[in-house]
Amino acid sequence: MRMINLKKTWPIAVGILLAGMMSCSKKEPAMTAERYRPRFHFTPPANWTNDPNGLVFYAGEYHLFYQHNPHGTTWGHMSWGHAVSTDLLHWEHLPIAIREYPDPATGDSTMVFSGTVVVDNNSSGLCTGPDCLVAIFTSHVHKGGAGLRQHQSLAFSNDRGRTWQLYDKNPILDIQRKDFRDPKVFWHAATSRWIMLAVVPDLFKVQFYASANLREWNLLSEFGSAGDTARIWECPDLFSLPVTNEASTSKWVLSLSGSHPQGPTYVGMQYFIGDFDGTTFTTTQTQPRYVDYGKDFYAGIVFNNVADKSIMLGWVNNWAYANDIPTGSWRGAMSLPRMLSLAQTPEGVRLKQEFWPIPDTLKMPIDWEEIFSGSFGLEATLEDGGTLELFKAETQTTQIHYENGQLSLDRLKSQPLHFHPLFSSRETVDIAGRPAAITLQVVVDQSIIEILTADGLYAITNQVFPETNGRIAINARTRIAKSWQWRQ
Image (cartoon, rainbow, N blue to C red; front, side, top):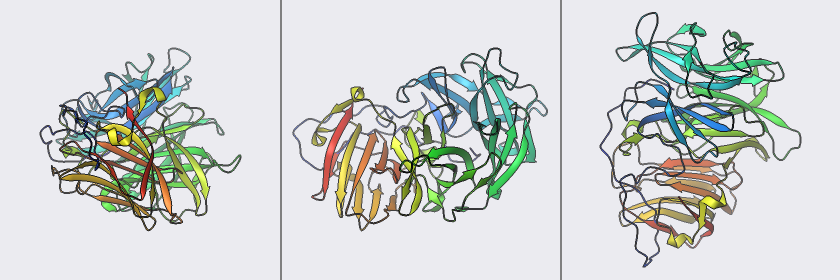
């Protein structure tokens, strides 16, 4: 999470339904007032959101905390919004968990920046029962819009996250820097202690700390100046993943948000594969590898306290234009959750992603030529030269194309409404081995497109804001094997 100064929001824009090239006599549905709001991707009830925070599973609920401005639809007054879910698809909105507050020493405003929630078996001494939820977040002290100091602070909850109390001895970690943020905390079983990662963004450095009680922290090691350093580092995470096609093999993955594969004008996510011994992260990786090649997947972290899988959620937006997207009363969404693993490939071990499964009860099978609404899924195979068009209408189209081993998602003509000069773009990724054909899982939810290759090795996530209804279109080198529409 970072502090920025961006332009004020634009007025409410018009909405989205889905598209195609084929003619059909069926009448298209009317536009709706909130046509860009996704149906099964998380959005706030109103106002601004960015990074997911404090992802944790506890007492049968997935908790999503998120960077939130309670007072407007652009960045500011950072507080932690809160929602819970039992299936990661339907969310119950709860009151704001931790609000911006005055600094007790100076009276300056303290924004609640990104951080973590863990289930603590009372190592902190703050639980009134056998366990409680503990949040560790960046306390961003600022005055008159200028950042003064960032340190790490703690809050705790003894009622399943419904109310939170600030620790009276905050901050718990202060290295006397203006920029020092985004703590990710997890329990490291092999050394029986808590581990914290935090970044010194402008130095491209991740610091590792250890604690027995979540309140007192000791520096262990540092990792930095590797991979993509074209833009500051943010939102670190560290997790162990199995190598799915190598029995009893696992590796550690360090993920970071920062620059984009197309350069520092945009933001994106990279990852490193290596080893972590409880003190130091090491890797032999020399080149950056990216989590997603689209423009709209950032600040992804995984849920704590999920025993059998690693589930990542990311922010679907980009700081290049985030404050200007034409969504009206709300601004910002989260990705569909992704289950992470590793796969051994001819190029080495790589990150593999799978969409969180949507139950058949929520998917209505439908011929792709009959799809008009904006929330659906497709399984499509593109041979060399294959094209799949979404939101196809007279003056707009969004194209997925595969040619010469390169997959692309083109939104240059996705909307006549040009709300920001940096939004229109074409994303590309080179597919290793240049296969003759590739199969894609495509999920569309009103204004969000998420694409995963069938092997899970490549992802592209983009927003689009078409002005009119449209349809799906394919050329002769494309086949759609499955298609479904969201039932609700």
